[in-house]
Amino acid sequence: MRPGKLSLPGISRRIARALARWDRHLTPPRLLAGSFLLLILVGAAGFLLLPGLYTGEPLGPLDSLFTSASAVCVTGLVVADTATRFTPFGQAYLLLLIQLGGLGIITLSSMIILALGGRLSLSHQAAAAAGSEVAPRIEFKHLIRNVVVFTLFFEAAGALLLSLLWAGRFEGTDAVRHAIFHAVSAFCNAGFSSFSTSLSPFREDPAPLLIVAALILVGGIGFLTMEDLSLRARAGRHRETSRLSLNTRLVVLATLVLVLGGSALFTLFEWDIAFRGFPAWAKPLNGFFMSVTARTAGFNTIDYFRASDSSILLTMILMFIGGSPGSTAGGVKTTTAGLLALLLLSRLRGSRITNFHHRTIPDETIHRAVLLSVVAVALLASAVFVLTATEVGPVDHAAARGSLTQFAFEAISAFNTVGLSIGETASLSSAGKAVVIFLMYVGRIGPLSLASAVALRRKGTEAPFRFAYEDVAVG
Image 1 (cartoon, helix red, strand yellow):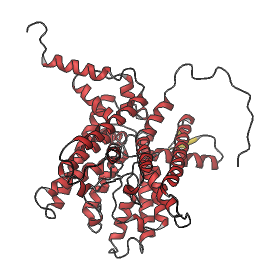
Image 2 (cartoon, rainbow, N blue to C red; image 1 turned 30 degrees about the vertical axis):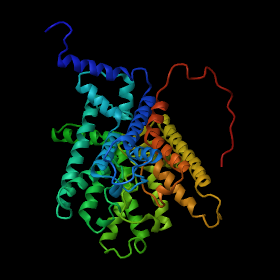
Image 3 (cartoon, rainbow, N blue to C red; image 1 turned 120 degrees about the vertical axis):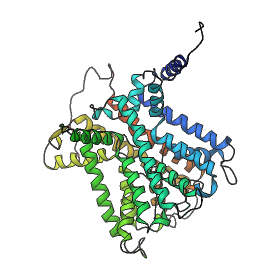
């Protein structure tokens, strides 16, 4: 080989070094936040510049940014009907953003660098495997590879099953197109639908609803939990001893409680309201689907505007909690809610330590859960305040009193990347859309980046002294 001539392995190594070099001096929270911001901006540029995306009038700059943020942050709030406004190519582009946002640019770039033989910086690893400190048995490279494998496997399986179910319902390749779209959207907990009325046409069709619900649950339970369960299953087959991590036990327990409890309550609340006219067997099915989708997926089989106030409040609670750490779902996460419940129980019992399944949870972890919850509530309260100021306008506020519920619902849905709405998202003012875009972005990266920032300590951050203690009355 002549001097200076590059071989394919040499080119690959140079590309890997170039991809790894750019993030070497970035902190994990900045790397994570920057990757999503970059993808949102690139996605918005695509909506503005790419030809053949629309069936009619293209989206404007703000709506392009809104749609890109909703897709990348796997939220599902829309300002344009996905089914009628976008061509099949436009829907494919939207689905690409959903997939990239669901997996995360950090995960994908990690996979590329590792595949090309490069090495990842510590900040890249910390950003890509946020939360993996709870699963020390799982090696980083193995985790990154399995994230992609799990995603492609479940999405392919869901798309295949939905294609078979819808083969006789749609013409030509439409069944495959709709199946792929919903499988990816469901696993990524995005909530986008290629049908104008979401999954309402299938509210009396158990198979599609159960498949979509299963994809939502698997996508929302978290890659760390799936990997831990997989390790336990493999150990069982080889008759080896393998204990599930405390994180996995808490995720599974919290998920079961929320899904089953939500299913029962939704069925009770909507039996003669939103479910009126449904066959008796379909009411528990739709109650179950409402419970699953409310925790960050955003699909719907009913009109939430006509749902009872009890269901609206329950939906907001489930949206706020969301999915599990290390998943495609949003919210403050099931583990946070579980830790707060355990903290409450321990204090009611007069104990100063928090235990779960014969283990004591570190105080620092409890403090992070409390901090995340307080920040989320404060941010949502501020957003609702701004929305009420920008959206109500100069009207009789006695007549517009119910709009507070709509704005609170919209804000929680955006921040926790759910995508459900009881109003018209498209009717928001420019200021209102900007607030929702901000909530979607912070909701997608906020809990992860905040948890990473709190977990990382540097020398010199601790004060060399403390002031004298003095108590304050509480309650």
